[in-house]
Length: 134
Image 1 (cartoon, rainbow, N blue to C red):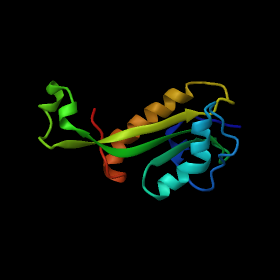
Image 2 (image 1 turned 30 degrees about the vertical axis):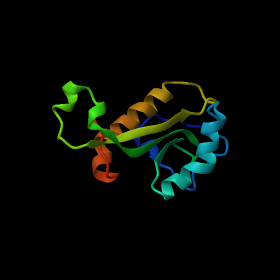
Image 3 (image 1 turned 180 degrees about the vertical axis):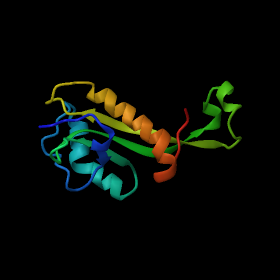
Image 4 (image 1 turned 60 degrees about the horizontal axis):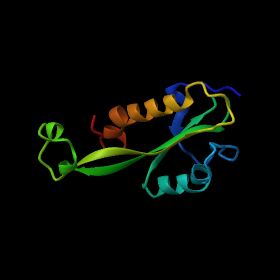
């Protein structure tokens, strides 16, 4: 096993990724990754991204991003007055995030969270069709 915490090993979930051994300790998240995530991607409900080992297709962590809207009135007034006067604004929703608990924790969860944030701020507006508020 060769797990490298580098952005190039976080990729969009594909049908060929091995999810069978993934275990984060949550039955709901394990079931989601193994049985629902590809369907959500195919239906454009969510964009699942997985961290794979550098020498295999084994999934060791994942997160999902979705586009959503937030009503302008729900934002703090100080922030809202700096934004366009639309009824709602586009945001990126981090829906799920999990890491495989069968491997040593070397900052894997934090790495996935930062990768999701980076993707939502830098890549999503141009490649996924949504944006996020900072």
